Amino acid sequence: MKDTHARPPLIATLLAEHVHLARIMELMAAQLDELANGAASDSHVLYETVSYMVNWADRYHHPREDLIYGRAAELDGQLADDVDSLQRQHDAMAGKAQALQQLIADWRRGGVDSEAVVNAGRAYIDHSRAHMRSEEELVFPRIESVLTAADWRELELDDRLRPASDPVFGPRIDREFRNLRRKLRRGARRRIEESVLAEWTGLEAILESLEVLGSANHSAAQETAAALRTALGDSLRILRETPLTAAPRCAINNTRVAGRWLGAVAGIARDAAEDLSRISRERRRQLNRLNSA
Image: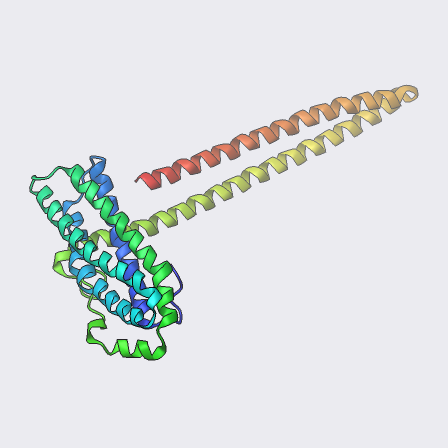
């Protein structure tokens, strides 16, 4: 979604309402997924999501858009066809929302199969999302370029464009939507909790990985120091015992010590890699549990 800074207040309001509608669509989709998977879908919440579209989006949001579209179309003939298409979509969406609302009501009474609800609901969501994308990406920017500050001031005087209290996201929640609002609030809280847990899981994995790397570095340093001490001690002993043949014997011995050192360091690196892989697998498991919870 585009930045609403410096936008005309009416466009900023419509975009803010799109954010709310997107949250409703997301919740509706989640309920339909549960229904499709045979899980215990909340029929009250599912009904209220569609009721919100019928009683808020189709009664207040879309009519306000139509008024702004109509004014822009008067000033830009090229925009008229797109505006007309969107206005006709608003009418069609209102009819589909009412039909879906009735379908869900019939399903709750046991008169309709759940598959019909899932199919109709998903089709409605797909169409609604595509409609909002078209408005935000294509139509709203063109309207902003067509309407002048004077046009916006005149539109703001129209009582039909004055903001109406949102029954779910406004300061006062309608009793009709109390289940919906409660579900949205729980969902928002859960997303925050999951985000915090995911961040903590990632931080914990980083700290544990750093600890593994630090330990491996310390062990490798100890092995290196021990190998150097051994090579030096052996070389001094060989030099005292057999000074005439010390050079080749020291070389052979140092090669042997270096081989043991390389083996030890390789083992340390292998153990560190296994520990890092384990940490990564554990983090993935924790994130999967968070996503599936």
